[in-house]
Length: 229
Image 1 (cartoon, one colour):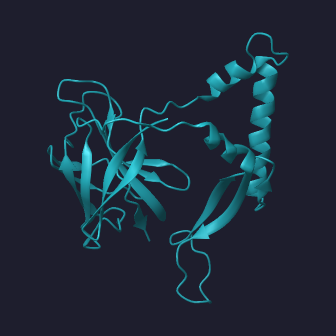
Image 2: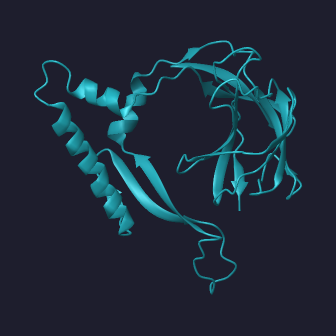
């Protein structure tokens, strides 16, 4: 697995974190193709039916308020959001039910086979240096739904050359993506936008753009986690 290093800003001390790059993602159809490859006794239709039934049954289990556990994964329900005192009750406008998925040892052991390979960072990628939230008057910490936000960095300008460019907020538990629909300032070193109506939780922010005359999507990388309270 290829990786590069990303600088962190922490108490004015130099520190770095590893960033996976050029990581391919297997799709559902590719998974089915591998399972039903020539020589396998498993057929495409039957395999899809079993896998779909497996996940639908787990979904129904969760919708009934039950956790799920097997040899590969553990799925547990939880809550996010603060309660003012012991008398306050769940309010969907302030609180959220979360689904947490944990890999078991059988899955985690896959990392023992991975060989990390360092590569020099791509200097042409958009770079987020700081994020300022207008409403909370904080930097690199909180984000406020429907408030304004400034992003500072390098090569940030969104050229709208192809579908998929923009500013995205990625929920770190559900991995649901929310795109900023209003971008007022669109410059190489500054983006100003309106934050979407985000549910409570933790997010990473990603700028996706192209070069001025290109059509290949480039993705920024920012290790900072932002919180919606």
